[in-house]
Length: 436
Image 1 (cartoon, rainbow, N blue to C red):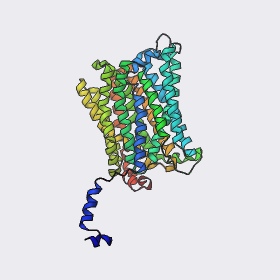
Image 2 (image 1 turned 60 degrees about the horizontal axis):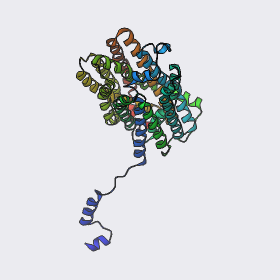
Image 3 (image 1 turned 30 degrees about the vertical axis):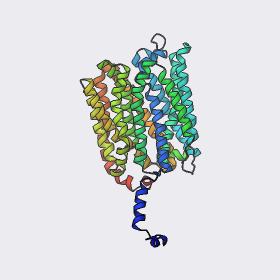
Image 4 (image 1 turned 90 degrees about the vertical axis):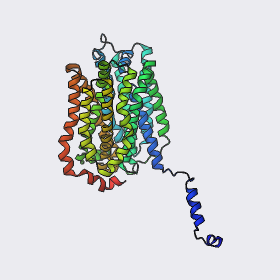
């Protein structure tokens, strides 16, 4: 036996030792896996900081100076809350494409994420200081909110783009982004409600602190942006020549519209209909965001296997029906159950839709393509605020739920022939980009 071992041949004892000691070997973590985890944590922090403000939005705008006597955009709490949210997402729409184009043109992502995160932190901190000054009109508060949105969207969109740059499957990478988005929203809402109970400006200070941490964290990451650079005109032309990107953009618009609807109208609806305080409202919103977060990664990976059509089209139709169920719920318990179902369906739709952007975009245009998706999403949020808020204010909550849920169902039905004609499931699997 000893001679066999000395001659380099494996013996039964050697194989047994190898089997036993293999259990004690450290798990190998590839750099892309580590970066995926860190980038997902950054996405989580950005969304968490954003959602901290939502459960106590009515109290916050009052503390920041929303006064019907001095500001025409603050005639009611609903109006002031709506414009406070619209200011941020309007800035998202305007500036997300700028961040994406600059990133693709320069071939860098990391420094711009750091810059935008720190700028967002400073803006949140400036908003927190407003109540101590007492001389800034509400329109000035909205301008600060625009600056905060212009900065924050850079960190969010470019971090998503860095996830697109990773290997490992587009559904998996976007699933990681999705679970981070969902967890940030699920935890941000209830914690934001509790912070508001302590002090209305506490969510602003917490958001500023988190974004400083984001800037420090991202500064240590490897920048995996494709080496080749292109002019801004070439980037925009490349995206324009891919009309199929309009599919995930359209779904992203409607999906984010429902999120904006729940953030504003849903929050006020739950508080008025069921007489809930901000803390309880945050917990009810978490009934959606918890399953939405926890199922994003496995369902995103599933879309790598079965294609994007079933998760996106069928999932969206069922998602819309679920929204109608939330509006029809007669009690807090049934509303919570409906929110859980809607969260599960949202987790089916979201990562597949984002992965579809990666499937269709050229690797040199990913920043611009993801920026386009986030423009559509930000417009969707605005639509959720404006359409939902206007319909609810003029015609009541029942019609508002019907309009938003009906739009989600309608887009699924309208795009079925397009998905089938393009055969996007097999195209995504066979495309060289899908295998990167």
